[in-house]
Length: 112
Length: 162
Image 1 (cartoon, one colour):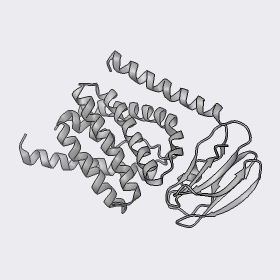
Image 2 (spheres, rainbow over the protein chains, first blue to last red; image 1 turned 120 degrees about the vertical axis):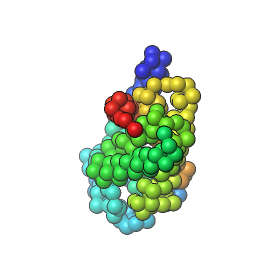
Image 3 (tube, rainbow over the protein chains, first blue to last red; image 1 turned 45 degrees about the vertical axis):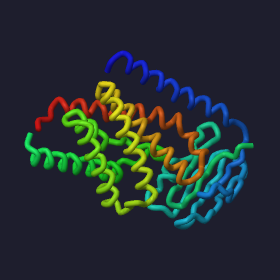
């Protein structure tokens, strides 16, 4: 790989890592988790210290959101691949949205 | 190379791409939402180097249409997501070919373009721009998988004999 290419790749890499850190610090503190459907309508709002298992109905079946210890995850979801369940526990520090395409469900942190 | 031979070889390369795609989807779970290894891109890279742009498009179209047909999701949502990923990554390969870039660099850019294409399509389909928060993660993971697939492609190109 030529030098110019290596430089471009390096810059992209820095942008990626930088972006990761920027988003991490952006999302700290107690937060409201929102479960939205495919039309971006809010189905459920839960604070991350309200523990429990919440049931939401998606396009394919049931989607369960478990909140515990300021973390949340998808459990027991009616979908073929279970990608959302494999994501594991999400916290506001290690944040990523939970997306379930078959059910048309999105679990994000609300903007407030 | 005779036309028949070339047609046969392209069909073979397309089949390899489809099988790699199916096997990867079956055995290697995505690390997070939509982050896969993208090993099928190796075939696109190799085809591009051995033949040219048109042939790369052919193999990629085969990968897209037959691969999704076999998965049973032709024209469903995953099809369009896959289509935009493959389309953007093919475009980027076209660009890097014009720029005469190295295989590794082409691989990294095409992996990036693929992820971006998929992300854009998901945002369009689900009207959820919030998914864009995945951009940094996608950037880093595409860079890494691009290096992986590019390295494999380089090794294949060293050994392959048509």
